[in-house]
Image 1 (cartoon, rainbow, N blue to C red):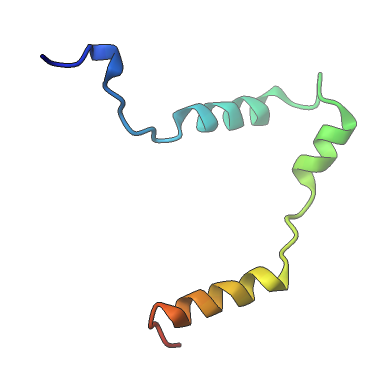
Image 2: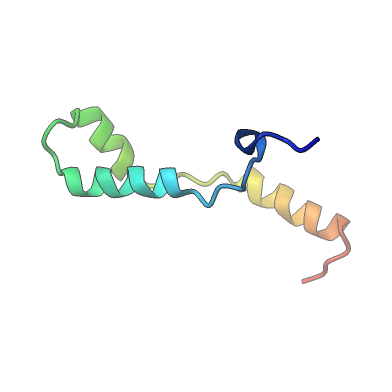
Length: 65
């Protein structure tokens, strides 16, 4: 017996997130809280520990620089 059409899951291509980001870009400043605007404009902080772990994982997999 085959599955119901609703039970067939297709991989997402991120369409919901793309649409959400487009709405956020086009909506402008009206209706946005100042703290939310500050969070979206804040640069992403990078931690040096994460890069080091990535290098160790790369070496562990056998990839050399």
